[in-house]
Length: 361
Image (cartoon, rainbow, N blue to C red; front, side):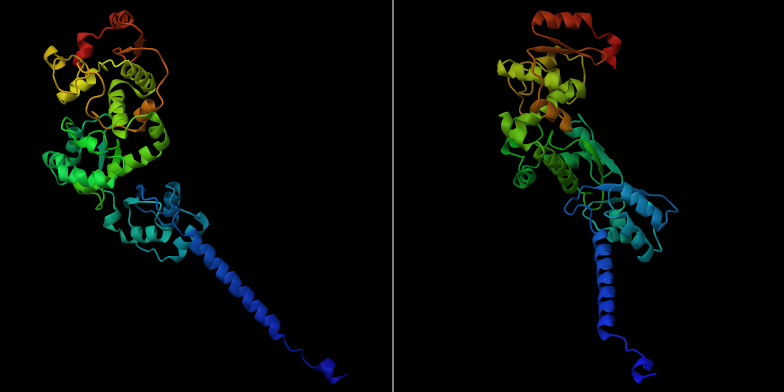
């Protein structure tokens, strides 16, 4: 046997280096995928996402809740993080997060029970609610009275600050005939109060931010409409008070026809707004009001919106039903009847009258 055949073969240093490089590449790739998988789902999207974490929820179950809420970029890596993150004091509560937050940031908040992100009471900006009604709802959850809230919303210096900040607010809202500058501009929705928006200013801007998003999504249609944002919201608010969602395009079509013919809108809901009430049986003294909001007396649009709204009546105004009706009448059951002439309109009223009981409701 020769020495060469009996000697032990030396391991190739090049082979060992290649193995090391491969292991490092795998580790780097694993780490990169792990980091990427924990990133925010939608950076820049700070819309509130409310998540309820029930008592007894473990880290793995919390991943499921967060995933259902759309806050998880990669469920696999989120599960890995839930095992490796050291989350040993997870606290049940109702939290308010957003899609610009990384997964491990959210988990740390839940682990700490960070009160800043715990949902407080919610405030509903009612669809069709007048500004005074919104202030009353806010006062139940915030440390301000309805009078204080309304005073802030009527403060011209504050309103001008908002005009400078929001593209869709204009000097139109400070017209001398406008009853409340921000009427119609607080988007109707349910809002969760956190430490960031528990002031009058914070809550107001949250509602305006939402309105801004809705209007931006309709920017092209608004520009093509020939109307200003203020005019669109004014007409949309009247449509909103006059009809249910399914009838709003038809009613918007009637109002567009009347405006085109320079007729008065003839809307009782604008008269109701003058007296800050909702009723069907208006008194003659109310119908005779000389307020510029009285569209029974004056042609054209009133000075401003008369209630808060969602995007539905805005869409109805931007895309009204094409018809040749001049009149509409809502019966006691909510059904809307249309007419081309005064005679047809009166026939609809006679055929579907409101009873004393209906009027009392």
